[in-house]
Amino acid sequence: MSVTPFFRVSAALLMLLCMNAASFAAIPSLDDDDDLDAVFPTVADPLEAWNRAVFSFNDFVFEYGARPAAKGYAAVVPQCVRAGLKNVFHNLGFPARFVNNLLQGKGMAAGVEMSRFVLNTTAGLGGFFDVAQDKKSIVPVDDDEDLGQTFGVWGIGEGPYIVWPLLGPGTLRDSIGRGGDFFLSPLTYVRPFEVGIGISSVRIFNELDEILDLYDSLKRSAVEPYSAVRDAYVQYRRAKIDK
Image: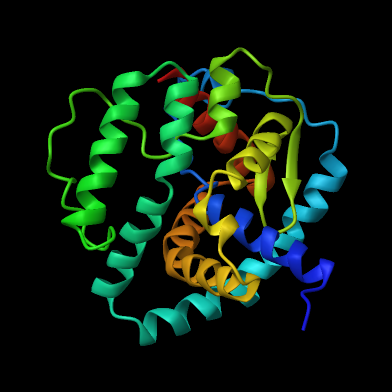
């Protein structure tokens, strides 16, 4: 039975969702005399009407789809297994981190990524155990280097803010970057597609608890959740590019 084009698109969407699982970041705390523009940087938002509608849709999915799924998954999968699976998926993200370090001119960081990957893949049983975690790095290494950050380092503007269904917040630059990172992910090339979707689904379920905790923290701290998520996301991304 051949795989339909719709099924292929669904597979790609699931894999992209996995790659963007950490889009939400906590809002930084504010003191009374803080400069609001400095803490919450502005970003072009010409698609605000669309973005707010999609934000509401995503919020509904989080509350009535993701949250029950996360509780069910946590009830049947022990914490030690979830931690190991998180390590495995982080290990699988090595190609994107390695390539983007090279593209940003961070040769030593790329070398650290390579050594960690080899150590965790061999001594860590495919990455299930993060045996390289306690090894002191010779240079600071970003655990989530991606093509959007590379574009930023190259001086490419972030473009307008966009909220995507299920994928969450982004900018035009980051959205294009996600497409490039998609082709650097080993999960993209798993065949048949059903197996790739199954693996991607496990990663989504495995990270839901963490995503929901961040999202809940963000919403509790915000007077206006849409603006809070937008500004926190932009600040988070700019901070990573400035590292």
